[in-house]
Length: 137
Image (cartoon, rainbow, N blue to C red; front, side, top):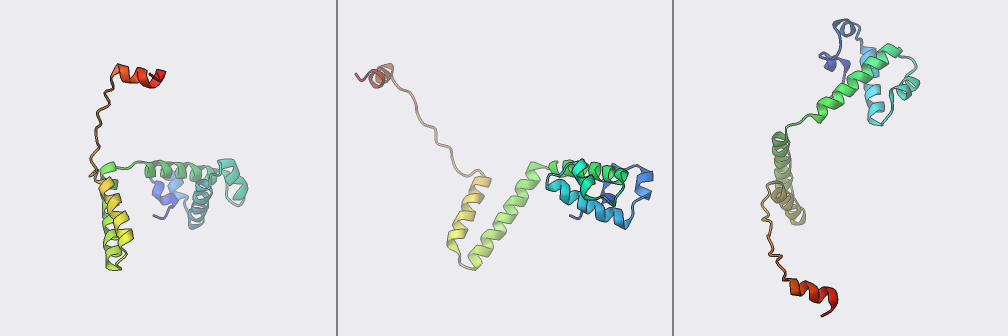
């Protein structure tokens, strides 16, 4: 997904939207790169001196909104995507006869689908057994 300030229509005011230009969208990409690298707004302002403080602040706020939107996900949809990707990898590894990789992928599919049964163990211990262990009886 390409990030531009146009993607922040819900966040920016109509006046800010009309002020968007190609150059501002290019600096939005730079703001995004720096924010991903962990730069603060003040560090971004130092790095992008040719851009106005207002544009940098708007861009940075837009990037933060973008990050928040990326964090919102549907676990069922993501599980489905992961399952589809694993199936694709499995089929490709079988096609090239890489059975070791196929086995690893199948194990991942089994974990994703929760096919492994959890074993329940009986942990009842008699009191005299504990005493024997603790006191060397």
